[in-house]
Each structure stands twice: as C-alpha cells, then as structure tokens.
Length: 272
Image (cartoon, rainbow, N blue to C red; front, side, top):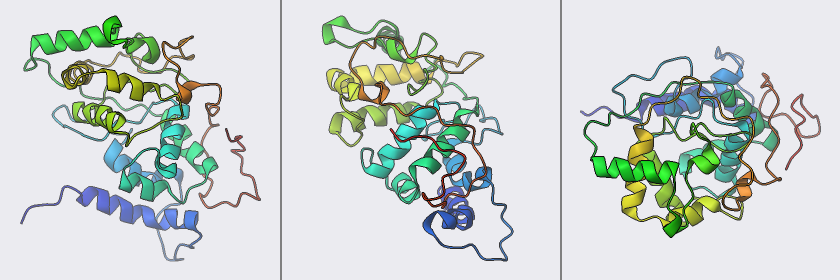
C-alpha cells in the first residue's frame, strides 16, 4: 500500500485541533497534554511551509512556499485574502476562517521574525536561453510588454521590502508558476489595483516559465531580511502596498486565539 504524502499534514492538523479549538469557542479537554503555545498552535502551518528551526534538505522539492522571514504586512494580507475569498485554497481557508484580525496579525508577526534557509534548485539542467530571458525580466523587465523588473518592487536582492512586499527567492518553481496562473485566471486577487494580475496578464506562458526557472534557482543572499522601506514610487499602482497596508504587528505573545474583541489583547493593532 502506498504511503499518503498528506499524512504529516493530517497529523499536524490533528495536533493543532486542541489549541485551535479555543479559536472557535470549544474548550480543550482537561486531560490534554499539548502545550498551549503559539509555536504549538502553528505546527499545522510549519508542516507545509517548513519549520524555521530545521534546515531544508538540499534535495527536497517543496510546492508550498517558504513564509519564514516574509514581511508581516504581506503575511497578514495573504491570511485575510484566504479568509475573505480573494485567494482560493480550501485548506488555508478552512484554517483561517474562524480567526480574528488580531490573531492573524499575531501569526504574521511570529513568522516574520523567523528565517528558514531555502535550498536553491540546480541550474545545470535548465536551458540557457530560458534562464537568460528569466534574468532579463527579473532584473530589467520588458518595456515593450510594459512589464517592470521584479527588482523594481521586490528589491535589488529580491528579498522583499517592509511592510508588505514579499521576497521571491527560495520559492519552489511549481509554486511560482501556480501563482502566475492564479493571477491570470482570477483565482488569486489582491486589493485593487491588483498590480500582479496586470503583470501576469502581460506575460506569455513561456515568459512565466522563464521567470520561475530563474527565481527558483537563484541562491538567497547571506542576509535574507527584507528592505526596511518599499521602493518609492512603485512602477505600477498596487493596492496591496498602498497607504492602507496594515501596520507591522507587534511582537507575538502567547495569547489564546479565541479572545473576545470586548477584551482587547496586548496586540491592540488597529485594523486597516
């Protein structure tokens, strides 16, 4: 009998049920021995997105993106996008649907302070012409297509920028391809104006493949931290990095996820 690749995910979800129960108003059994800590509650996240405390095996190929070290504003935006229907992935939607804005900010803040090294894809077997086209689009863009360079928003080192622009290095190629496809068919959206949907519509499938090949095989810099400020002005109007972008969440605490809004927690971050 074949082993189920989803077994670690299923196990992690089961382990997370007890602490997550508080988020939906169900008390955990008194006999439960699982510690009520933020790190334990997020085991369901790290089973797919990687444990910041463990290095990624050199030969491991992941589909799910690395989220450790991403800007907190970006992570918060994506969590609310899944919860509110702007991004479509049933497992993510199910996990975040009952969670409050404050708790999503706390989760985003937790992962933004972590750093997970990502093993780059070998370039030896990739076509030279494809890599050259990918490098051109990433570093220079294509004026004829009205496509700006990726580095114009994501930074010269492609590690993103605070408060809400993600880094692009360390992401699996299949994931990058899938996100371009999602923007093209409308199953992934952001706050209007949706700059990435505009860019994705202007790129051919061959160009998308070239960009994903180059990005997925480019090693991360020694310091993968995002820039402290977003590039100004951006080459395209982009709603997700506008002045309405949520402020950086404060340092995460061990607050239980089900806390009533009538009793503000230490987070006390204003909604956007």
